[in-house]
Structures are given as structure tokens and as C-alpha cells.
Length: 508
Image (tube, rainbow, N blue to C red; front, side, top):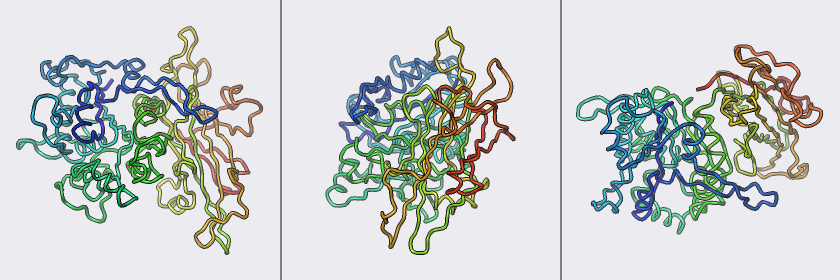
């Protein structure tokens, strides 16, 4: 087990900061009793016990909050504190006025430097080689500032240890990796500036993020045209160890949604909520609140599988070759993707046109030749060891993990820059099917290499649950990779050579 450190998001003004510092867990213990799964669209009762409690109850972690956590750590000898512990980076405490001290203005690089010290202290006292960082909103930028900049700057003349040698994984909820921009002007922009303040709105300005994310820059330096805030150099930290949860529901957030626009979680634009090349999942949740990312089942299940999953499947679309556009108009093809994992009441990942985030196949086809594998990446599936799924102790766990990938392909036609509806059927996909995949071993086998079974739902007689595994024989793997042919109804649209490629590997 590796220690977990939580880093919260922006706290607002003094009142908001004071409220957060009064909570020993900085709000990460907030749960929820609402979920939007009702058949009539109304919220239904669904108890979510918060990500912290779930880590304690399901994964063996424990809190050590008795008095001052930092003082507790400093009073212990090296290698005497359990590694399976959760810590909160309380960087807002010095900016609060509830402790009887003069409040200090918040500074993101100071928060990042303090995070570095906390990481080193936790590592020393637990003996763990690395830690796991979990962050909401601005907290992800604090983590990145520590990893990408602060850890490379000397302290009191002595070099620090690079962040990539201290952090095993980084998981972010709704972090504005590409900054925050406001579409609306006038009063709404003025409201945003008043809400975030001169030390808030500037923190999220893409051109100024350069100052605390790039080790050769200082606050106030303007970024060069070639620099992108949502890109993490591989020499700084491997993007394969980053997971970004992207919210797509602006309706359940506050006034900010009107300033940011609909293609967002209400505060962070969808296109700005992830690190380029990092793993990500899109979920229909807002930035925070009752229907927010942090206190959601979707968020926790993605978090748990990324941190502790035993298996990983990278899903890509190969051989894409769309039909040519007609001479008198432009045909646009979109794909919708939904990922479901057996045993969960929620969809783990969904890119839908209704949520402003479908896969734009034309653009992906243009980029296809630029990728080393020539594929269009669809999603990455992280799966827990079946033994950790909490089944009845009297019933042996299943030998296989199962997930379903729901794919829809939709054709749109544009003429003179406007959508042309003459041949359009609303809500009718040109191709729609579900690939069901089982990953694991044959019944009765406890060891051996992983195998995969896969079948399209359109070929299954009866219900999906009646087939386990989903096909009679496992599909052949070559170096852990298999190509699953698309049904003829799909290849007529996506090309004769189009197929889904599943790259299966272990994950830890």
C-alpha cells in the first residue's frame, strides 16, 4: 500500500477558507444521498459515503487525525507509521483567520512547496517509496506545480528530489489543467473576477499558469506561444500515471456556468479538464456540490480502479476510413461511447453528443496517421481483481471481469456551415451496438496468463447475463493484443478494415 494525500480545490474568499479549515478532511468526507438515475429524470435516493470513507472501508486505509497531523508525523521515528494511511494537505490553514493568527494571502507555489515537504515527511515516517496524490479542481494544479517546478528547485541551497520519484499516481477531479476562461462578458465576467479575486482568476489564466508550472519561469511571466498548460513533459512525470475525471454537467452548478458556457462542468470547460495523453473519463457530473464529481459513485469507481486495478485494457479503433463527403455538402461523423462495468449501478465513462463531448471521427481520422499505432483511442478500462469485489464469502469470486462498450455512430450533414436536416432522423444512430468483453481465466484456473472473450450484443441470443463467458472460446491474443472485427453494418460506414483493438495488460 502507498500513502494517499488529498489536495482540495479553490476555497474562495476568507469566509470560504474559514469554512474549509474547520473540517479535518477539508471536505473530502462529504457524501451524497442523491443520484440522477430516476426513470422520470428526478433525483433518487442513493447513499454515497464519500471517497474517504470508501477507502477506509473497502481498501484498508486508515486516518491518523489526532491533534495536529504534521506534529504527529514529526514526532514519529522513520518507518514507524503505517503506509496505508490518508493525509490531507492543509495548505489553506495559514490563510484562515480562525486560528487567532494573522491570515496570510494564499500563494499556489507556497502551497506546492508545502506539499513537497508533506510528501517527504509522509514517505520518511511510513517508509513508502512513493505516495498517491488525489486532487480536486485547483488542487491538481498545486500537485502539478510541486511535481513539475518546485521539486526541481533547490531549497536552502540543497537540491530537492524530482516529483516523479516521489509520486506514483495523480488522480484529478475537475482540475482546470488548461485553465479557466469565461465566454460571457459584462456583468458575468465582473462576477467571476469578484468571486475568484485578483489572486484567484489570475491563477487559472492559461497564459499565467506558465509561472507556476514551468520550472524556468516566475509568477507574472507570460507563456511563449508554443507552451500549453495541459501538457506535462514525460521527463517531468509520466502521463500514463495521471487520470483526469472530466465533468460534463454544467446545469447542477452555480452562477459560474453562465460565464463558462455549456461545454463544461459548470466551471471548467471540458476541453480544459484533462492533461494531454493522460487517462480520462467523462461523467455527467458538475464541478462540485450535491451532484458534483468528488462525491459521486462515478468518481469513486474510476478512482478505485485506477489506483488499485489489477488489469488494464486500452481500447482503440483501427483501420478507420470514413465515406467521402458529397460534392454539395460536408458529412460529419460522430461516435458516442459509454463504458459499463459489471456490478456497478453507474456508467463509468460516457462521451455523448447530448453532453457536448462526442468523438469527432473526421478529426480523429485526420490525426490517425500521426499516431504511432495508427489508431483512434477510445478509452482505457481499469479492472479490479475479482477477489476484491466484495462478494458473499460463501460464494467464490468470478473468474473474470466483465465490461461493456456501447458504441453509436451518427451522421450529420452540413451545408454552407449550417446543419442540413433533410435526411436526418433525430436520436437514430447509423450504427449502434455493444461489445461485451470478459477478461480473466477459464473456470477453475487460479493461475496462468490472462485471456479475453468478446462478442457483439447483436449476435447474442437472449440476455447478456445468460452468457458467461460471453463467447464459447477465448479470442487469440498476440503480445497481449487482440483485434475484434466490427459487424458488417459498422464496416460499411467506418471502412472494411475497421476493427476494435484491445491491448490487455496487468496494472498496479
